[in-house]
Length: 502
Image (cartoon, rainbow, N blue to C red; front, side):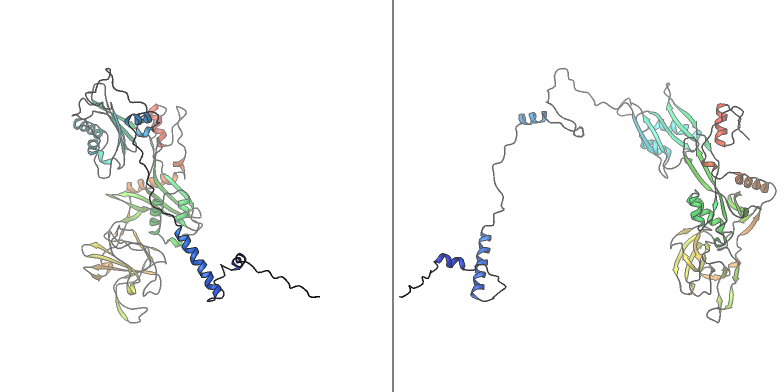
């Protein structure tokens, strides 16, 4: 028996089309028919995507009509406008018969302002800029000058001025009052009296002049310890300068104690005025080691030791606190080994000791200079100049003006040097000369009445308790009390509680 043939199904075109791989991996079979078919699919899809990119041009439409004046008025009436823009809300109303136009714009009845006295300014110019009339300014200046010198008014002082109503727009406003602080202990006020004239009102301010005394242990840093104890920064700098003129700072031990007194004034109104350093001292084991007091002599002030010995200013002062180790002239150079001219003086000093300007001058050079190492030259005028060599560090800068005794650097051993010292030179018309040809600063000795007053002032300052100037200001409570502080004595004398002591 014959078996029938097996039926074979033939796929139609849809099945064949579906079996085709239209998106093959283009990284495989590169160059084959299948690869080119995939490349054609990618190209067709890219062209289709680019053809469907939208247009980003402007969309034109009808322009809205601008609102009419009636519509604007209606919208404005419903707005809440901020005060910064005038708060112009509500409906606009036309003026009725009760509204009358002003003949002139009204003026403020008075003007209150504050003028500041600038540096190099004058009291009269301040009043003129503020709008004070010529006659009132002249009268006010005369009244103020009768109570205090206008040249002593501190720059930056605020002056409260009140100007009244003027009679016409062509005239200046009359001065009603001015108020300012003429001195630390005086406030002045100029007011217009009922009769029409200007009067002066003096308002004294009680001031406590108790000096500020600061004491403490030197510790690892004298400067930091003094600042931490409450001493003003400028006073501490002056203190270090005075102490360094008597001994090397490296000789001061960490267990030593510092003692300084500064001018300190405190007004009853709360202001504080810090003055100059008055006393500088170093103690060891509770005993004075250095005691220096600033004392007025002649036309200036100098620092004196407790014994009354001080310095009198000469043409040149010693540039460092130390003795002379090598003089001016020919000598065998300690490094080069042959004789050569030694054109200056060598001063013995420890490393880091301060170097002072011999006298006032201008820094002509500051920097490295061959065998001199770190070198500074000062020009003092009249053909005189000084040079300072082998510094460890330079403080002064080129073109800087320095005062006599100002620190310009510190002792070192830079350049051709065998150890820390200061090589000091003096030039006359550009040529080095022997510095000993010009006398250094000489010592002065107080005697007689001057010495007695000096000793009394020293005892007074040393009797001040540390921090007493910062204590609260008490008031005398009983009639028989004699206040110990100056401010209390003044206040007590005003109200009749006690007579001022002394």
